[in-house]
Image (cartoon, rainbow, N blue to C red; front, side, top):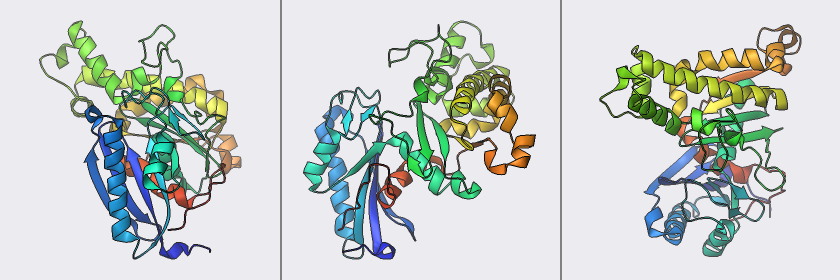
Length: 342
């Protein structure tokens, strides 16, 4: 029996290392209700899954009498192996290495679940509901700057998972070969220089070395560092300039490789976009001949607007990953997933 989409709803889950967010969603009304829970990592992964499933059941009990359930979408930190739905040493979910997340969810919920990386879902949401919708573009690459640097790629409206579900790990591309050791095992990864965590670590290192006297004597977060930079603190501004430089190097490689029309930068650190922006575009213009040829206003872009390369801050903010999980059951992807009828 075909599902009447106008009377359908989905449930989306954003599984994070700090919080669990579970929401009911319709395409016409958007988010109907959101449940926010702490991610009880110290209690063990089964306790977290029990909390997650309990919230899903709660939403089903509330909304299934009124709508048909199209499906359940879940976003998780990676690395995530697909289609198995198995996690491999996710840095923000300590103790979850080898966890059969998809199997555990489907067993406990007794129905099909669509599992994806959280960065892919943020990218999907930006494509369908955010920057992509605004610009009429159905292909983009997104970097999310948070605890680490996530990466999602959308091609022709579909998530690009790669051969094993691990496509889109630009956060672990090498920016500085002799740089800081990353938990992934590499040296000088992008997320060691352009994440919220990296910004704070850089500040603390420079304070300890006496290289940031204008920051000494205070405990900093990425947000307070940005506030100081906007207020004119030269040491704080330099930290964001350096983060923007690393991000620009990473983006230049992506532009040269993918030649997509849109690159979106999201996550908590994007609130400092105006601080990051000058160094980003300086590096793009220096390191990417594709960007120079296709930047807005270039002859190529003027002759072929769909061939222009746009680099923009995300539109959806902190809800991008959750919205992506919610819209995933409504969106056919390259694995030909069939929506679940409630």
